Amino acid sequence: MAKSFLNQSGYPVGFRNNNPGNLRPGVVPWMGQIGVSNNFCQFKDMSWGLRAMALDLSNKITRDGLNTITAIITKYAPPSENDTQSYINLVSQYTGWGASDIIDFNSDSLLTLMRAQMNVEDGKKYADLLSDADILEGISLMPESIFSRVKDFFVNNPGIAAVAGLGISAVAIYIIILLVRHKKVNLQSFKNVFK
Image (cartoon, rainbow, N blue to C red; front, side):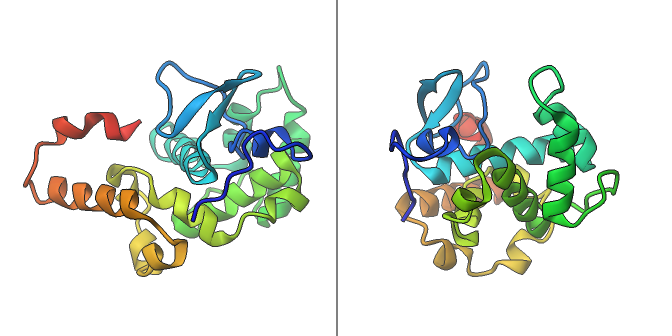
């Protein structure tokens, strides 16, 4: 069951918005986005906020070629708004990776990077309220095209649906992915699923 901290006082803004990555709105709303609060996206529950964070990081690494902590964080938290170098240092410390090390992109490194960024964005005390299963639930909601880039996601997590406690909607998404993959339905009919 997905967690929700929506509008609960006493939590950092990322949690109050179910947006632990503190993502800002784009041209097209994210799946699961229900609004905007103080220029940050709000999601109906944490699984959708974690999905958006996972998708954003995955695209930065695989599509945009930002494959080091320095490159990712400089884009994610630009110096015009943040103390980017401190952010880079903290993410490097939390992951145990060098700031200029090439990230071997897979489900484990994505989870590690997400947790490190949540520690910085929301504080470790709050990030620890989300289990690895919670993060994996968000990752599992990403489009199949991203799963193919996360080369070992299903190999390392064969029981992810059971571990993450996914509901009917996630099973439906997985079935759609299988139907598209095996060319039983047209991908165009599900284009809105991918944002």
